[in-house]
Image (cartoon, rainbow, N blue to C red; front, side, top):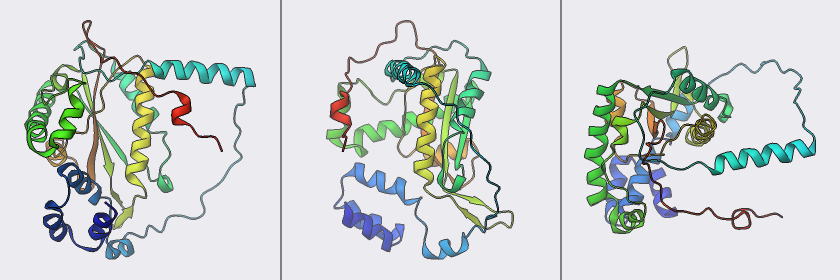
Amino acid sequence: MADAVVCASVYSQGDIFPLLTGICPPALLVLLRRSWSTCASPEEVDEEWQGLDENVAHVPFFAERYSEAEMIKRSQAFYELLNKRRSVRFLSDEPVPREVIDNVIRTAGTSPSGAHTEPWTFVVVQDPDVKHKIREIVEEEEEINYKKRMGDKWVNDLKRLRTNWIKEYLDTAPYLILIFKQVYGRLPNGKKKTHYYNEISVSIACGILLAALQNAGLYTVTTTPLNCGPHLRALLRRPANEKLLLLLPVGYPKRDATVPVLTRKPLEDIMVVV
């Protein structure tokens, strides 16, 4: 993997992927293709110098502070709320107030980002025809993914979750939220503006969005439909600097919705104290 990444940083995309096809698993090739777009050539780095104003005003910061008892109470309550979060694939078509969607995306927009570039675009789709076109694009590619690209191990690992390439929730969910990372921006003079750590920044925003949805009583399933990004970007008329990161169907669970019986790792398995 390390050799492949070094190789990819030296050669052009057209040169390297034919070479890697014979030595890398299909799933790894997909991930390499997705990450390629975040890399900039040395020539681009020179072009992308931002020249941002260094004289941004700084003001005193006053934070609300809680008692230790209140901190423990609030942190425990927030954990219990988020521990109820489940990935739900059976979503109702029951309407959801648009104001709630505005609020959760506004909340996601409070996320930190590299050099405060805020490199995210949240596309909210509510039009039934557009949702269905998205479903057609995703299902066509997902069938190929399951049958060819993902490989037997990946497909077998998903069997216990009973997932497949049929995505009914893309039609039934009242909203689809497609989160795009802006791999670069544009300055007023038209030159590229570097978006540092754009994928990490947008991923953090997605985590905050998931928490905000749970807090509002809404459910989703995080989907990363492989090889669908360019088609969906074209459908939604997004610019070339935006790459699809996540697709979230959002709504209420159906009354007969089911989820797999899963457990989460205990604290001692996920935290190390030094």
